[in-house]
Length: 105
Image (cartoon, rainbow, N blue to C red; front, side, top):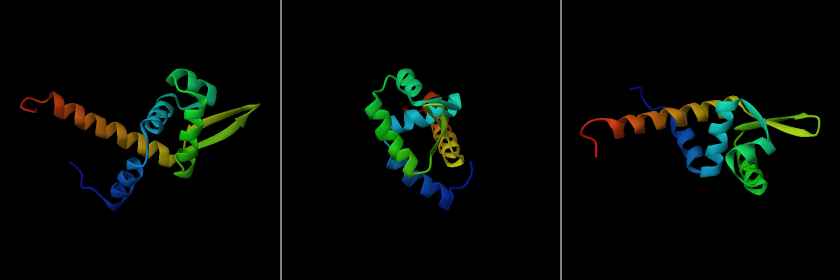
């Protein structure tokens, strides 16, 4: 297991401030690469208002970037966002393994 660094603590502090919907959008974009807002809404069964609230936070943390494509806003993870998503999935794997290991309760 690797040592925890100062950057890890900073990342954990950021993650603490994110809501479930923010985390869902991060993982979704990590899996699909990029998507217009309407697709994020439809695929995650969220309202536009919920997605826009999350995007405001994700932009503030520089987790999500966007580009225009015609009249659509295409969202994608920044390098910071990719690192956050990668760490979230790593944590999920650790927790899943702990739950499935013999003797864990």
